[in-house]
Length: 153
Image (cartoon, rainbow, N blue to C red; front, side):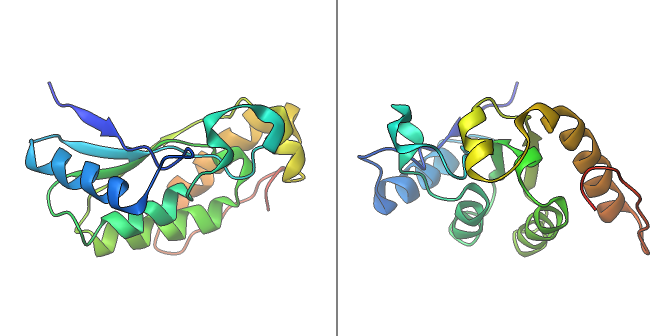
Protein backbone atom coordinates (compact mmCIF):
# COMPACT_ATOMS: atom_id res chain seq x y z
CA UNK A 1 0.00 0.00 0.00
CA UNK A 2 1.21 3.49 -0.86
CA UNK A 3 0.34 6.62 1.07
CA UNK A 4 0.14 10.26 0.07
CA UNK A 5 -0.54 13.45 1.96
CA UNK A 6 -2.64 16.44 0.95
CA UNK A 7 -0.67 19.57 1.75
CA UNK A 8 -2.84 22.49 2.88
CA UNK A 9 -2.32 25.15 0.20
CA UNK A 10 -5.30 27.07 1.59
CA UNK A 11 -6.68 28.66 4.73
CA UNK A 12 -5.99 31.70 6.85
CA UNK A 13 -3.13 30.01 8.71
CA UNK A 14 -1.37 28.59 5.64
CA UNK A 15 2.18 29.86 5.17
CA UNK A 16 4.78 29.21 2.50
CA UNK A 17 7.14 27.86 5.16
CA UNK A 18 4.49 25.46 6.46
CA UNK A 19 3.58 24.36 2.94
CA UNK A 20 7.22 23.61 2.12
CA UNK A 21 7.89 21.90 5.46
CA UNK A 22 4.94 19.50 5.10
CA UNK A 23 6.13 18.46 1.62
CA UNK A 24 9.72 17.90 2.76
CA UNK A 25 8.66 15.98 5.87
CA UNK A 26 6.29 13.80 3.82
CA UNK A 27 9.16 12.90 1.51
CA UNK A 28 11.52 12.28 4.44
CA UNK A 29 8.93 9.99 6.09
CA UNK A 30 8.58 7.91 2.93
CA UNK A 31 5.21 9.06 1.63
CA UNK A 32 4.68 8.16 -2.04
CA UNK A 33 2.97 11.41 -3.02
CA UNK A 34 2.03 14.93 -2.02
CA UNK A 35 -1.14 16.61 -3.24
CA UNK A 36 -2.52 20.13 -3.44
CA UNK A 37 -6.19 21.16 -3.35
CA UNK A 38 -7.81 22.96 -6.28
CA UNK A 39 -10.20 25.89 -6.40
CA UNK A 40 -9.89 28.92 -8.65
CA UNK A 41 -12.30 31.60 -7.48
CA UNK A 42 -14.46 30.75 -4.49
CA UNK A 43 -17.01 33.27 -3.27
CA UNK A 44 -15.73 35.15 -0.22
CA UNK A 45 -19.01 34.60 1.59
CA UNK A 46 -18.87 30.84 1.02
CA UNK A 47 -17.59 30.10 4.53
CA UNK A 48 -15.19 27.45 3.24
CA UNK A 49 -11.47 27.31 4.06
CA UNK A 50 -10.76 27.72 0.33
CA UNK A 51 -11.29 31.48 0.26
CA UNK A 52 -7.52 32.02 0.49
CA UNK A 53 -5.93 29.36 -1.70
CA UNK A 54 -2.73 29.09 -3.68
CA UNK A 55 -3.08 27.88 -7.26
CA UNK A 56 -2.82 24.10 -7.23
CA UNK A 57 -0.75 23.62 -10.40
CA UNK A 58 1.65 26.48 -9.71
CA UNK A 59 2.13 25.06 -6.21
CA UNK A 60 3.31 21.77 -7.75
CA UNK A 61 5.86 23.72 -9.79
CA UNK A 62 7.12 25.24 -6.53
CA UNK A 63 7.43 21.80 -4.89
CA UNK A 64 9.13 20.05 -7.82
CA UNK A 65 12.70 21.33 -7.25
CA UNK A 66 12.36 21.12 -3.46
CA UNK A 67 11.59 17.40 -3.52
CA UNK A 68 13.18 14.51 -5.38
CA UNK A 69 11.20 11.31 -4.83
CA UNK A 70 7.56 12.05 -4.01
CA UNK A 71 5.00 12.11 -6.79
CA UNK A 72 3.23 15.46 -7.23
CA UNK A 73 -0.52 15.75 -7.75
CA UNK A 74 -3.64 17.87 -7.46
CA UNK A 75 -6.47 16.38 -5.41
CA UNK A 76 -8.46 16.89 -7.45
CA UNK A 77 -8.10 19.27 -10.37
CA UNK A 78 -11.42 20.85 -11.35
CA UNK A 79 -10.66 20.45 -15.03
CA UNK A 80 -14.17 21.41 -16.18
CA UNK A 81 -13.53 25.06 -15.30
CA UNK A 82 -10.10 25.30 -16.92
CA UNK A 83 -8.72 25.40 -20.44
CA UNK A 84 -7.57 21.78 -20.99
CA UNK A 85 -4.84 22.77 -23.45
CA UNK A 86 -3.26 25.01 -20.81
CA UNK A 87 -3.72 22.30 -18.13
CA UNK A 88 -2.04 19.72 -20.37
CA UNK A 89 0.87 22.08 -21.07
CA UNK A 90 1.35 23.09 -17.43
CA UNK A 91 1.26 19.54 -16.07
CA UNK A 92 3.47 18.17 -18.87
CA UNK A 93 6.01 20.91 -18.14
CA UNK A 94 6.09 20.15 -14.41
CA UNK A 95 6.24 16.42 -15.16
CA UNK A 96 9.23 16.96 -17.45
CA UNK A 97 11.05 19.25 -15.01
CA UNK A 98 10.39 16.92 -12.06
CA UNK A 99 11.62 13.78 -13.79
CA UNK A 100 8.18 12.27 -14.43
CA UNK A 101 6.64 12.69 -10.99
CA UNK A 102 3.28 14.34 -11.81
CA UNK A 103 0.01 12.49 -11.17
CA UNK A 104 -3.43 13.78 -12.14
CA UNK A 105 -6.71 13.29 -10.33
CA UNK A 106 -9.58 15.26 -11.82
CA UNK A 107 -13.07 16.26 -10.76
CA UNK A 108 -16.23 17.93 -12.04
CA UNK A 109 -16.33 20.30 -9.07
CA UNK A 110 -19.19 21.00 -6.69
CA UNK A 111 -19.47 24.73 -6.12
CA UNK A 112 -21.90 26.28 -8.60
CA UNK A 113 -20.95 29.78 -7.55
CA UNK A 114 -17.30 29.18 -8.39
CA UNK A 115 -18.28 28.15 -11.93
CA UNK A 116 -20.48 31.26 -12.21
CA UNK A 117 -17.57 33.44 -11.02
CA UNK A 118 -15.49 32.02 -13.88
CA UNK A 119 -18.21 32.29 -16.52
CA UNK A 120 -18.46 28.50 -16.96
CA UNK A 121 -21.78 26.65 -17.18
CA UNK A 122 -22.09 24.57 -14.00
CA UNK A 123 -24.70 22.21 -15.48
CA UNK A 124 -22.43 21.34 -18.42
CA UNK A 125 -19.43 20.44 -16.24
CA UNK A 126 -19.68 16.65 -16.61
CA UNK A 127 -19.61 16.83 -20.39
CA UNK A 128 -16.84 19.44 -20.27
CA UNK A 129 -14.79 17.18 -18.00
CA UNK A 130 -15.23 14.17 -20.30
CA UNK A 131 -14.15 16.22 -23.30
CA UNK A 132 -11.24 17.77 -21.37
CA UNK A 133 -9.91 14.34 -20.39
CA UNK A 134 -10.12 13.16 -24.00
CA UNK A 135 -8.27 16.26 -25.18
CA UNK A 136 -5.56 16.07 -22.51
CA UNK A 137 -4.96 12.38 -23.28
CA UNK A 138 -4.75 13.19 -26.98
CA UNK A 139 -2.23 15.97 -26.37
CA UNK A 140 -0.09 13.77 -24.13
CA UNK A 141 -0.09 10.70 -26.37
CA UNK A 142 -0.02 11.96 -29.96
CA UNK A 143 2.90 13.42 -31.89
CA UNK A 144 0.64 15.61 -34.06
CA UNK A 145 -2.63 15.89 -32.13
CA UNK A 146 -5.95 16.50 -33.81
CA UNK A 147 -9.11 17.01 -31.80
CA UNK A 148 -12.70 17.93 -32.44
CA UNK A 149 -14.99 18.77 -29.55
CA UNK A 150 -18.36 20.37 -28.90
CA UNK A 151 -17.74 22.22 -25.66
CA UNK A 152 -14.16 23.34 -25.47
CA UNK A 153 -12.48 24.16 -28.77
